[in-house]
Image 1 (cartoon, rainbow, N blue to C red):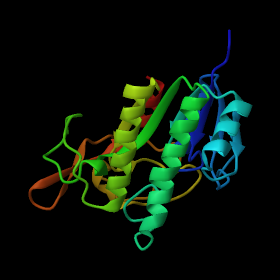
Image 2 (image 1 turned 180 degrees about the vertical axis):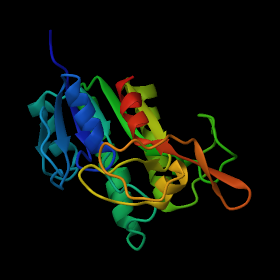
Image 3 (image 1 turned 180 degrees about the horizontal axis):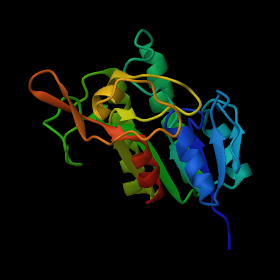
Image 4 (image 1 turned 120 degrees about the vertical axis):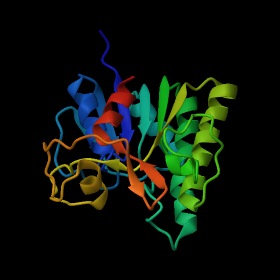
Length: 229
């Protein structure tokens, strides 16, 4: 039986790290791509400490590692980051994503999973938001994630790349190896304390934001399950 090889970008990050770990625990060979070293070494995960490169560099990496599935969780991961450098956001989240998608097409990658964001929808009605809701981002981060959604959909329609976008919203959960306390976690769990790896955080669909709006949340463990589908 052939063991599937999966590449996870952003593999040292809040989403990519547990996804890489969960995939390795299923017996898959996992290659992590992240310029930052992980908080701990994971059995079954080989980390390549580099940034997203151009198409040629990404193609060479996919070919050399015999990658069959790409899970793209890398890039600038929220509207609060790089607010004074819009070009950096576009370079990481649009150009970096396009380079990786094209490399995946060239190298015959079986599936491309894109970790997008509900920010691509902009202001939305109360959750749940339907998949066919219009993309009306209200910030540059959301626009770059929406661009990735549309580009991946076009590659799927015109070039046969099996791609799927997961629109994540306000992901929360214990930080691996780090102690932290976050207002979102406290409001979602009804607690007021710091969390450590292994703590059980009660899941929540949304928290109230202001008097009329509720903001959807996503338990990080649910992302691991979604990626496996």
